[in-house]
Image (cartoon, rainbow, N blue to C red; front, side):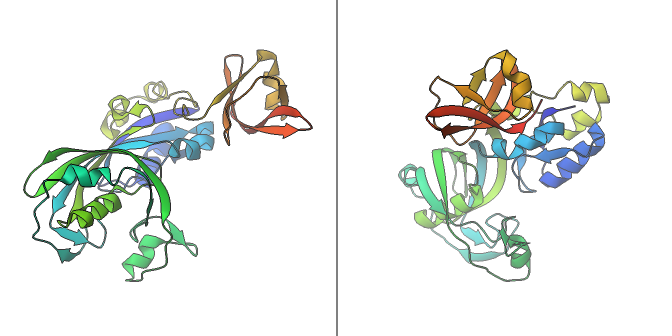
Length: 291
């Protein structure tokens, strides 16, 4: 039993809560998620089951899109409305908000929030934050490919944000609010896509609980389904056994430069591999065998 399940995470659940639930529903310990969603957030959470757990980190690296709502006039220590307010503003949402949003598109650096699962000296940042301790953090490169205001009122706005992996939407909203002078704090967040896969094809916890095991198994997607952002290399079908046994394959055709590739032998997805240049030859080597 190997594959990817698209779950519509409910509010109030941690990503780990969903993993624990799927372990029980699928009767296996080999379950992992592909990118943490905050407890207050809802939406698409791809769950990897069986050998698919080996590709979870690569699915996490793909772009993601969110629908976010933010209230005007406050900043909190968590960056969302669950936190403690430490600053207020009476400035209205500016008429040139779209111009401000454009300045936040493209490549940029973002400082991760203290209330996050990133680690410092082996301990998660939110553990320090709960003790009132602020530790050093380095800004990280992110890319915002799309940022659009969908609705705006006197006291709140809603946005569509398409971003690279590792982007904190609540931090992005806080930064936008500071730049606009009106302050913005996230009040709701829903992940609507990961790569080219949308939340429309996902299943709620309640729907999954109501199904027999065989029906739940039939929902699992192939392990390469959410790896479209990794370039493929197609080898002859006869290379299946050698590649699964750890042998490399020499290729004579050009391939796109990338750190890792999807490897196929005939119609079979073998797993993830790398390309090495050795003595004037180009060889494909497996990194993760998934058959």
